[in-house]
Length: 183
Image (cartoon, rainbow, N blue to C red; front, side, top):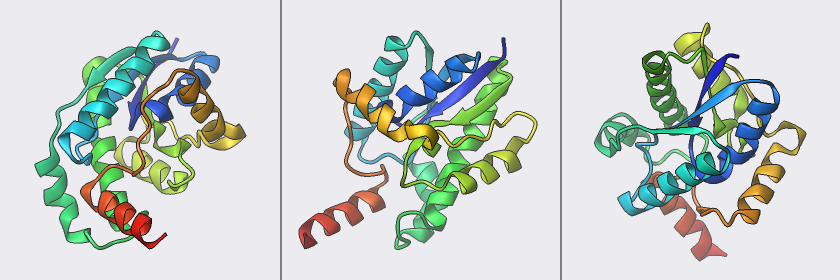
């Protein structure tokens, strides 16, 4: 049975992805690496939720370092980009590069990410970045297909998993707060 390292962006997004991969016959191992998340207490909430989801699904959980300064040094030049712009592409790349490194370290066969379950994320771009990093190890996916997002939301609600209201970085938080003030 092939072992897949699943990069987990948050607990909510992990449910349907884990279920799908297990149904496909893979042994799944979770990896939470998200240096983009701001502030640190939000990071802790998401990390704990991801761990809980892995526990619920009997999946081994791994956590990377929290490296917001590394993330900011790479992405801050794109602070004013809208959600889904160049900043997000760089953010995907940072997280997928570290996921590949962890894949090799743990002796996993493949890696993929929960990022593609979100209707706000472009699976095509995520898959292109992952394939460019390590085509022989990256498993392209679009977990939002076949109601993946709807299913993951239902699982999360049924298990009372923490759900955030912005993507994660300080810039997306600022854009979210601006958007809420305008409503």
